[in-house]
Length: 102
Image (cartoon, rainbow, N blue to C red; front, side):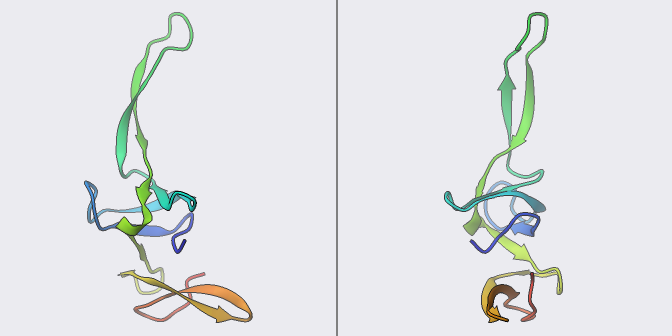
């Protein structure tokens, strides 16, 4: 998967289209990412102890990785990601400015 944890991404589809956020968690088996403050849904929490009140909280849900684009830290544009072999290691690079991301 080309998007990793702590990457800055731009959402290109869905209700949060054209908004940016930081990736909290990457789920490569499901091909999804969780973005901080985006794709929020309301979750109802039951009271656990006697006397405690239930509440409604907003939690971020996963979004498909195909619906986000990486924002290049070098050029600042939303871009596709490619791979190059540098020093016998696979490195990600920006397809717009051709600079190594990692």
